[in-house]
Image 1 (cartoon, one colour):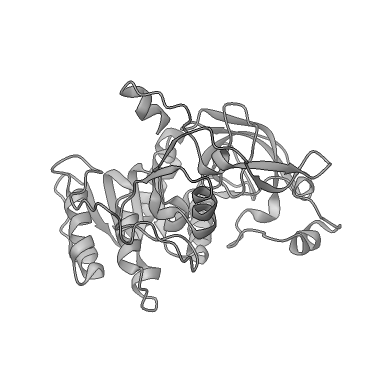
Image 2 (cartoon, helix red, strand yellow):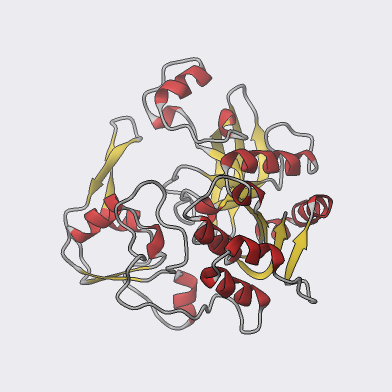
Length: 336
């Protein structure tokens, strides 16, 4: 967002995450973060929020407490906040725009997205949408899908970083990442050019903070002791670099993120009561769930729809399909 604003000659006083704007870390006395406190003062008169569909109840409450003017912008077709949030800012906006501008005019991804958002049967629309002659929208079955994955993620790291494989549930995400890595290298944990995703914010990084959901690639693996792996990671979109990052091995390939110290104590074999004792939480980032990658955009996207289309009825199924497909700016592959 900052790059786009600078490109049109606009320099806001602040351009960053809501978290950075309204919260400040609480020191745990050991150089780590014990929690987060709301900043007392808000030095701005107007707050403009992008990706409003992702704002949950707690953050919205804390923003409103400053009693400032807030303009929320978002896509009302996308997924609502994760969990049973009472707030969904895009459910009933003051102004509703229906024409999609995410892709260039004439791109079949644009047409598909519009049809999904209005179709009474979005699953059938996704599966029956015709392949595009120029390959901008394609349907692939299993064998072809494996070839597509290898092509996208085995080539130059620049191609891998501009590609995303989206699925519905963490169990399938874990399996897809395992398959891709099996065909890339023999290292059981991490290797050069592996695409990784941050699962817990990392602050004071060279070039800027690395936040939950950001993807980077490994430039060098330094060492692998029993419980952790040390590596250098570059985040090209953010122009940030993590040097000698100490990452928890047990988090890689795990369907869910470690959320409490009890489980972490069992894994590390010692008592853990501070996040600074754990190391950084990262996982492989070739495949991701739609919720995790919401708000990002990639030239090439593969959508694995099976676990959503074949699963139980989901009231957010239409939004899931729409949000997944609109992550692609140039080419979309539907894998069934």
